[in-house]
Every structure is written in structure tokens, then in C-alpha cells.
Length: 433
Image 1 (tube, rainbow, N blue to C red):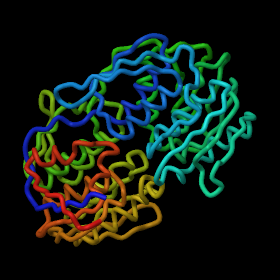
Image 2 (cartoon, rainbow, N blue to C red):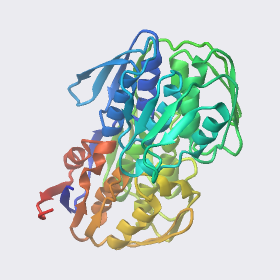
Image 3 (cartoon, rainbow, N blue to C red):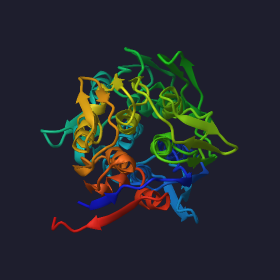
Image 4 (cartoon, helix red, strand yellow):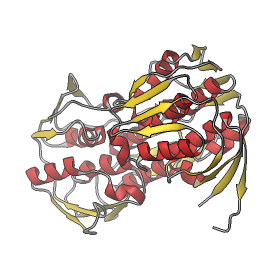
């Protein structure tokens, strides 16, 4: 475990926001299923992205990596032709996207496969797939009786109607959207409840379209999928990530001007709503030629429905803590099944830093304070908690000691370097751990 000491400093400057993790996963998988060679540019090789790349290689794709001067990667991907399991075990590490996207793709071929993972991924909800397995005659087995992973699966998907709960995670729907167009017949996905995290499905459909796959979307509740479709190769550039950009947008709001580059305000990403939320709270954000310009502002509390943007909660709780009045976060019950119980973890770290945060069943009630006090906290092995703590340090009166700072490697490996470039100060500590 890496422990660091953060000294409060204002952050300021111009930063190229990392590429979207959500888009990158989808583009890599689509390229891996294409008949031919695709080039995916502007990819950040985080632990999650490595997991998806290795999963596609296990299914027969070929991937070569070229590191660019800015530290990003360009991937040349030769698609699975044919799709064939080259390794019985697929390691998803701690990536929920990799796990849930890859399972239906594995079921396009007949060999037994073992899908496994690490950390809290082994207990992430998987019931929507188990229901489909039972209905479609797919054999599956928990190799560790006390948890969901490792999971052995054997059998093949067949065309037809797939009913699925839209309220657990959109990742299950995305997994089916990848696989069903390749079946020898037409299929329909019907949601049995209202779709949450709809923007993530919009991202999936947008990427699929770029690779030649056509899906008929009927109001986000029913998806009609023609069979015998073919993924076509594409040269695809991944856009900047609003999920990561949110940390820097808040840094500018509570501290000093930040210019956040490579954020597309016309993006399908649901987390672009961070701009609207901050403006509603009193934030000062303007659109430049190729960037968002955010200046320090006095913010006020509000009610925030995070059903469509759950990943924003840790950093929203930071800005809520430094706003006048009360900020209430609602409809975030799914956050209890992320890399950490993210509602508990967010409340824990901010309260230890001098905040006033109360947990509810599906969210947080946050009472504004003038500043954080500093103190010692843990990341709870959650990348978004670690980054939220870093941004909170801007408005702390004392130093912050953070255990588990390496959690950022899951999505943003060079976060601490960017933090220093923007004016942050931290040192590693040897606590004999």
C-alpha cells in the first residue's frame, strides 16, 4: 500500500484531460470483433484497459501498442477472425466493464471458459446474466462457492428475446449489444424495468455504429438487433473523459482557474452533466475553442439525482462539502457495489477530513463547511475516492495523509503526476507497512 502526504496547495493551469475509459473499453472490444485491422488512438493504458485488451487477446484478437509522446497509446488491433478462445481463463482484474462486457462475447464460441477477477469484483452483482443462462441453457459454475468469481461458463447464445432488468447495471445490456449482432438470427433486448445509466448505452450504440453495427433503439427500453451483422474495421480516436475531467473542473471551482482541454460538450457521455451541476451550484464555467475554462466561484448546495451519473458522487461530495447550505445526493444505491461501498467510503473520508456528511440508503446528505481540516484517510482501494481526497486538499487547513494512493492506477495512472504539474504537492511516506 502506498501512503502519501499531501500539502494543501491551489491548483491552476491547462491540462489535457485523459481519454474516456468508457469509450476506450467499447472501442477496443468492437475493434477486436471486427474482420480486419483497426487503429484506436488516444488510449490510456490503465489497469482496467489492460484487462479489456488481454480479454480480447484471449478471444483471438491481436493487439500491438505504440506509446505516443504524451504518454497515451495508439493500439493497432487485428480482429478475432474467427473468434476463438486461446486461453481458458480470462482475468478481468478489478474491471466491472471488462467482466460484464466479455461474458456474452465468450458465449459466441463453444469452449468452456473461466472468467475471474480480483478485489470487490468477485462479489459484484451478476444475477441478470444468471437468469439468462438459466433461460438459454448455458451451463455455469462458481468455482469458489463463497463468491461469484471465478465463474466457469460453457454454451452458446442463441437468437431470440432477452429480457433483462434495466435497473441493476447498463453493463449487462452493453455486453449483449456487443454479442447479439453476430448471432445467426435476429434478437430483441427487452428491459423489465426503467433503464438507469442510459448515457452509457448511448455510448455503446455510438461506438457500435462507428464499427458498422446497427441497433434499433426503441426509447431506451427495447433494442431490436438484426443477426448476421459484421463488425467493420475503423480508425477511432477516443475523446476526453468527463468522469476524470470532473475532478479538475471541481479543482478550478474551489480553487483557481483551470483550463480543461479535450472535453467534447456534444459527447454522449452522461458524466458531462458535471458542467450543468456545477453551474446550477453557482460555478463559473465557459466554453473555449477546444477547452472548458473554469474559475473559482462561491457555490451553494442543491439536490443532485445521480441515477445517470453515479461515478461523479465522490467529487460532487467534495464540492458539496464546500458549498453554502446542504447538498443532497439521491438515487445512488448502486454505488454500494463499486470498487468500494462508495457511499460509505465517501462519507468516511470526508468526515475524517472535517466534513459533515451523512449516509442515507441511496445517497448522502452533505452540510457545508468553510474548509476541510486535514487528517489521515484511506482510499478504500477506490480510484475515485483517492482522486477526490486529492482535490479536497485544495481547501484543507492541514496536511492529508492518504493510504492506498496507488488506487488511481485503475483508471488514471498518471494522476499524481498531473496533480503536481497543476501545482499540487505530495511526498511518499515510509510508515513501515
